Length: 163
Image: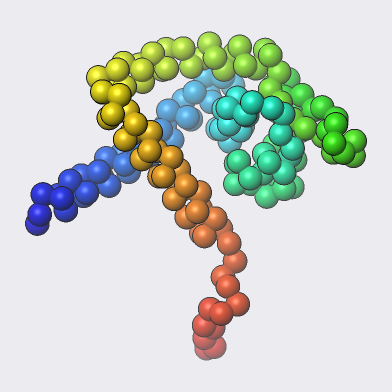
C-alpha cells in the first residue's frame, strides 16, 4: 500500500468519525435548545442566509420535500424561532427568516463549541485553512449530490427484472 493510499484511507475513516461525532453533537445541541435535530439544522442553515428565504429554499437547504419543509417552517414559527414575511416580488409567497431572539439563543449556545472549534483551527496556517475550507466546500457538494442520488427515484433506464 502506497503512502497516498494509506493517507486516503485514514482521511476516509476520520471523515466517518467526524460525521458521526457531528450527528451526536447536533443531537446534543438540539436537546440543549429544546428543539428537534432537523429543526436545529434548519435554524443553523437559516442563520447563514443573508436574506429571508422561501419555503422552497428551506426544502432545498434541508433536503426535505416541499410539504415537509412547510411543516418544518410551521413548527419553527410556532416555537417563535422564525417569522414569515411577504415576498416583495410575489405577494402570494412568503419568505422565512430567524427571529432576533432565535439568533441570540443559537449564538449563545454556539459560543462554547465555537471557541473549542476555533482553538482547533487556530493551529493551522492560512494556507492550510484555505485547503480545509476547499475540502469542506467540495465535500459538502458531494454530500448533497449523493443525498439527492440516494433519495431520487430510479431512472427509467434502470433494468427491471420480473420474478
